[in-house]
Length: 385
Image 1 (cartoon, one colour):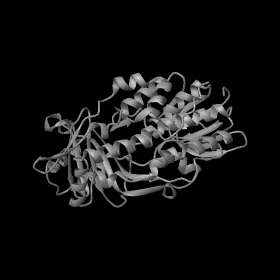
Image 2 (tube, rainbow, N blue to C red):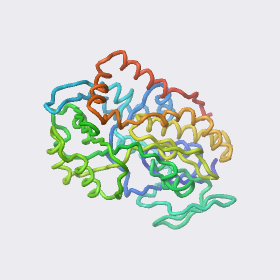
Image 3 (cartoon, rainbow, N blue to C red):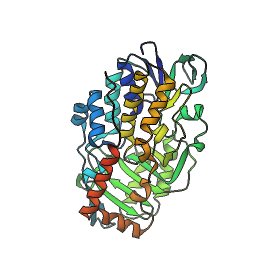
Image 4 (cartoon, rainbow, N blue to C red):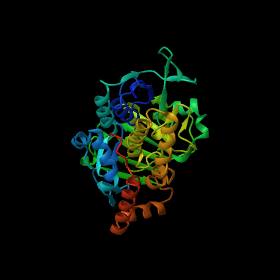
């Protein structure tokens, strides 16, 4: 694969994970990212079970992920008087290994920046496939031609829009939004303990190690600029207007938040992962916001896609077909459920039922067993030899 040039759009998790494998297999890899620098921060992400652990080990980063892990922590569900109602154990929220998204992205960037070309602060504007490659134009950089293009740029994938069609054809709004906000000292109040407060259709969580404040709220689709933090702050404050507990105090600090990210809870539904020389990876192909499996799907998907390209000697038609055939069954978990009603139940009855789930050892063990089964439901080939 030494003569294969690959452009990857997206420098979060899926893109650099794929870049790591392709560079090892001899490809010439370029990663383009709209953000000006690698993105720090973000919520914790986690890995579960033997499949995730095996891929991390084969990548050569398992020990470093363990070193940087946050150590999943329990979260206490409280009422408006801060009376404990239930405890969500760290083993449920943090899987086997939990690490901040920004720390994992930094680690993957560190492991690939010397073997791959990174172009920050730029974005793809057009893709034109020819008999021998894909002609790509950029917002800032000069046009270039690549053998293959990979969309690893999230649920709102620019590559998917350009190669497959408008986002509205592939992304389903699940009736909720979430926000992560760095509110300074208020993030770690409650003596540093991680607590979660609910009202029907609204959730706020603060505390825990290095955690930004986390919000989930029910809403019809909202129209706003995803790159305008001031718009996002206003929407968040409007969604929590009139709330109880510490919500007025938290909302009063939102205008001064040093960092904020607000997005919809959505599911991606595509009938195919590839078209011609363009292929989708990670959330761009099988995203389900806050579903608990996104990062695992990204790193395993990158492993399988790169491995199939190597096994096919760079023949993208064979490799993309095999990637989809072997991976779609594993990715089926992304088609199931929505985290919105679980995190922010729409009624007080649903809130009580959710809390009761975590007071039952039987139900908790059942959920953990199901989680492990989904995370390991694939036969991993060893593509390294």
